[in-house]
Length: 389
Image (cartoon, rainbow, N blue to C red; front, side, top):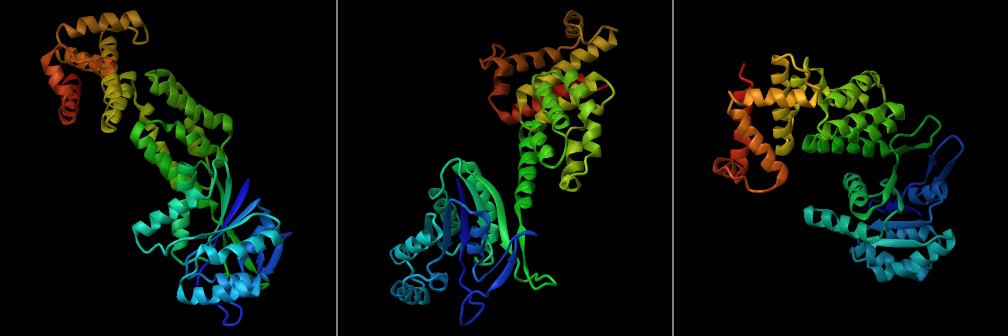
């Protein structure tokens, strides 16, 4: 089900009629002259439900008067609007009559003025109570208070995450941007939601290192799906401790990331390339060490210990001209190296303790695990000791 949520403001642009009538141009085929953009948008979108959102002082009286609602109900709204005391009781009859005319359910939602964080949070909560999981939403921010579009953008993301809805588009009738023909263009602001998706993906990556979150965003930005899926595949190999396969896959897709010229590439392309640039190191031990450092910075200590340990084993293989991709060679190289380099035994014990979740027998290791700062500094010290040359 598609629901249109339209904000109703307070300003009177025309002393006689309230909102000024404008010809809103939606596309080449559709334009409508209307004083209230939300109703023109409802005609264009044909939603299954309309929700009008306003404060106790929004111009409910003008809105319903222009729509031919019962005179007595409008008169009561006029007095209440002037006093800033509109309540749900006064809106009940007008909203039902409007719904009958439009042929769809119409709801009116009273919200506070969003003057502080408490009222702003209250609005988000109120919006969440009127939507249903799986619902598709379109938001109209044309007539609300000037600060409400910012809140609507936050609300769109909040409702997606908390209420399980899909916000398809944000609309704004740009009355201050008339065309040469005297029409008012209708702006679609959904690109802002896409930008928030990228910002959120960057935050997710910085937290857990999973650059697979960028794959669907690249597809939405115009990249071929097959190529974008390679990025998610590379992330899978990395997160299953297979840097060789991860590097092979990243190598094949990195050129596509560099060449991508989607609408959001200019904003996020360089940052994305920086995030996945670890594979450019010369040797496998360099890739693994780089990953170990990155995961330590993200406080993912199990992966940090694992990749640092594997980097040491890989280097031990290379120093002995062993095949670092052969399990038996890696085991033999490690056994030889650990006899002369005790620091790697401590790293191994830490890795095992982190992996198995049991208190280690070694008292020093146990104390290290009891405090995050101590664990972090220990991992960093072991890393520097093992790779000091």
